[in-house]
Image (tube, rainbow, N blue to C red):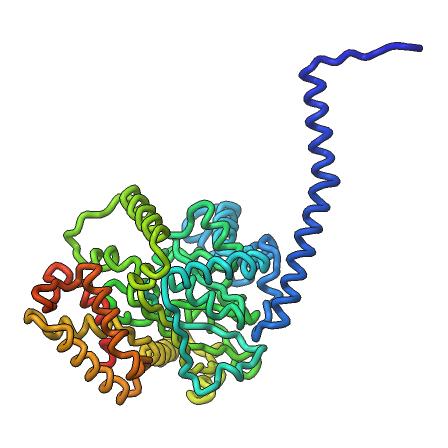
Length: 468
């Protein structure tokens, strides 16, 4: 029997596409996923062998499993019922909200992206812009950290570069988990940030249901030993000063903490400072309530122009324009020791009493952060220029005043690293940065603060005002 079947061209193409999709789904994709999983597992094994604090199983949990854990958490379920009754909403609708919140908060950590791409990007960007300096003021305590403890780096927040800088500097010790604001919830940045273990936070949300889901995630991650980085001020400083510490995030971490049963929570104070903060103009501008609001298009255009101009600079010119970025690590504070010294069990305290101890803790941590915020040349020279306003001063006079101030700061034990040999060159470079950015004006070899740049000079000088 010799016969043939004729198919329309469209049907033949449809069958061909279907066959290709089946081959892709059943043969190629499983093999590709196996290959990627093998690479990721190899990276995890390699990284865990050299990290001081291993990647915790909680970080490697699939995102959907984290979402389910949050949605069906006992405290979340109880709050869900209360929320539904209070707002006269069906429980299914409230649960759908909780699922959305949990998906928004829960990260999808990828060790390969974090240590292969993220580390490279942070190192490249940090070193491209700044001369990076790291200091330790911990009397060797960081080297003796219990690997089973939950380590939390608490730091001041001067720039969005803080995320990049600290991630790069502690990458040999731990994989950090950050709380990131809504500014980063844009594609494809959102996907990249989540794959690096960060979780998004609606900082000004008053939604009780959302706050409960966020609280449970932070608490679960802390109890699981996830290494975290927290900006204790809750946001970027706009005037350069250290802000009052917030208690909410610390309370989320420590709510239900039992010193005798739970792993220790070790808070490591971190002080950050820059000779040039990339966002300084926009931050200072927000202090003026009469200033017109910039459009998103203006911000995008300005950022693109700045990035392009920076990339086209020579390496030497970038170093001269941006100067130093410095990070100091201070003495860790043990939560277990804190509870024993105060004779308390946080899990047994009522909200008001617990918050009072959390407030005391946050104040202690902020004091330790203030003690290790680096004193950099531009901040120092800004202070000197402002003190001499409105008189004109020669470069020699400004350097002499700065050198005297350095001696005073060193006598107080301030974190300043300027050797006698390099002092003159460092101060000259700082003055060059201020002049290049139009913060000071010159006349016949004399310098003084430019009136329209007073707020920006004060922004940098304020970063070291805690040393009087």
